[in-house]
Length: 404
Image (cartoon, rainbow, N blue to C red):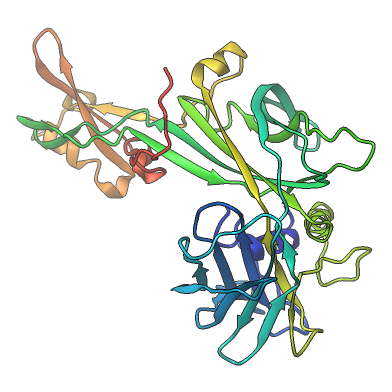
């Protein structure tokens, strides 16, 4: 992605995706309000995020934490959001829940007295996801000079009630193991203690960053079939080494919101600048009540939601004859016998002390001679290859199911 296009996405997804924020110098704009919000018909607390861009691309965006934020429907009911700090505002899941067919408007008043409002947005229904499935595929990279084997995850959706515009997002989670888990602590050559809390298996998670949208016009098949959601190169990450799960969410869009996402996608693909003259314009549905010419970034999203989860296990990758991922991990086994004779002679304590934390290596286990039951060598590896919590979490996700 180009820096300018990444910025377009980053200001919208700063707190909820994997895309790294980028803040270019914006000529003629001291600061722009960035609004990110989505309400659905889920029984959950909804989040609105407010921040401001800065001229300096190296500066951290300023989060707007002292605003009044509330949502109204077409009958005049109001639901105020609670400020959670850090520019995050949440609804009360008990008091407010989106209803299909109702229209919602977002209202924001900053501490400076600036008043912002979205256009009314109707919550449209969305059909069920019929199935998630996968198949072996290949993807070209490096300007088409290299091919990667992997699997593509597809989606089929049931026909909707006159639905025309769709968007998808996903959350992926996978289980992984480090190759050389730390199982022992070294006290001295006579006291090597097995530890109870071995951080061998963990989970990683990631949220989608790409824009996944589709339009279905009259005359076309109203049923979404074999919609590509995500390609995973099997030998480029540890996603498929044990077990993988993806949760796909399906949203219905209005024509205006579809145009918003479509234009963002075009900016991203062309590497354009959202403030430059372009054949299309990225238009927000939020405006300053007293200054309609003020530019606002982001979009107040209103949609019903349907979701479905799919698990993929290692055997699936084997059945597809896909290449495996190999961890870039090295272990070093050393004992006194591996060093030149000195006076005084090398000891296991000296060997151990030769790998301090600053060396980048950590002791993980001893090698015992099975014939003599004597200590033979000490095994060291890099930290990230010994402790899965350095790149993941040992807390098992609530939804996780282990498939054998």
